[in-house]
Image (cartoon, rainbow, N blue to C red; front, side, top):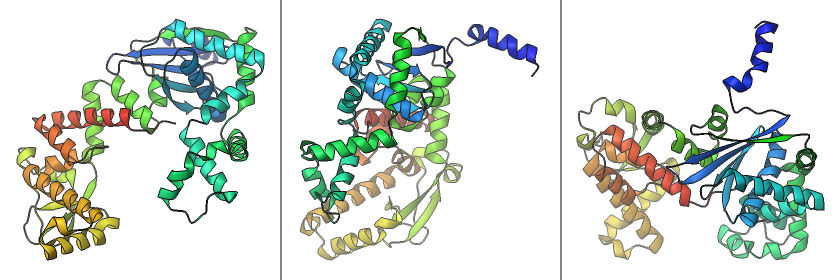
Length: 377
């Protein structure tokens, strides 16, 4: 590219692209999602990964304490993506930022970030690691014991201080955040809030990360593209099937099997050894456990005689096998969805008329699952 063209593009970049990260202007993209009934805000601060973590925590704290709005976030070196619990206005963003500028003036931005990170999953994991090193929790403790005492660890100042110290070294760049906010306060960096009806490529790129990214991306992606992307994810792989009659294990390529189907809801899967349709999905870790439970069930002839944990597994096996017997490959596809169990799969299948509606209904259920599942940072 010639110097003339390069210079022309630089001088006219705002005409071609309204939203782009830059170091002289703090660009904020506000996208209100009608489908989610929430706002997605991209703060393009270019602070790097650790600086982005610091900014995300600080702005989340401001949203919660000043606006009474809960948030979830994802970080990227060029910016922070915030998913707000409701629609917000540019004035709300201005209030949150003004609060952070006041905090900087008072010299307590580290305290604000500390207050926010203590509520996060990353802190909970770190304080447990610290407690093990300090001997407060035995390294041999099982998960149930750790869960029982984990909530009390934040009452031990020495553990809290050490966990915070480590996170501020490894994960959070508080100095970059301070410098950035001071430049805004002194007007060396201007603020520009842009409301977008269609998400920009930058928002789409950052939104490809993690669970929050999955929710955002599905809400702003055109329906036909959404179906095609999800279809590749849900049917491109292979699944292991376990025959509950002869215990044979076979592998099925979903997309290859679909090529044989005229109607996916009447396209059944059978054990190649005994011909039974009583199949269930399985992974390598479960094989011996499932065999033992089925042996005991056949021996007793009564599911009520099994141990409680065996009964739970046996019921799951029976329900899943019945679903696959009735719905064939469509049932298997439904069970590939995130957070989709047998009962949910039944509802999805009842609402579906072909492969595309099946895929779309799975994605809608996944979004519901991820909104309610406690995975946020």
